[in-house]
Length: 84
Figure 1 (tube, helix red, strand yellow):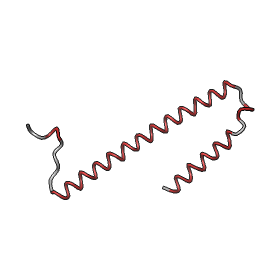
Figure 2 (figure 1 turned 90 degrees about the horizontal axis):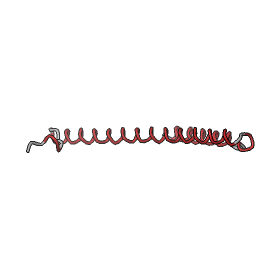
Figure 3 (figure 1 turned 120 degrees about the horizontal axis):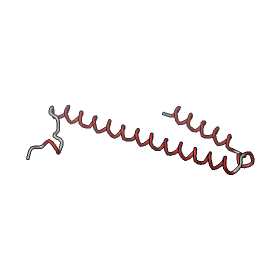
Figure 4 (figure 1 turned 135 degrees about the vertical axis):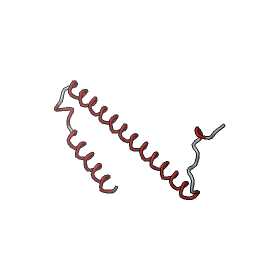
């Protein structure tokens, strides 16, 4: 986990260093295009983060159900499967 964080921090610092002074080198149209590209990358990263969080929640739920089965010896009923 720490190695991945170090890698992300290093990549971010390098990216920021590469962007330094960009205003003097590019015209307004190129800067707008870069801004739009960066926005799309941020949105894609947020979507991946949400997908990971959803997967982690599902894994915790499955683990909780497995523990319940192990403790009681039977599967808990889902609300939709309880006969009325």
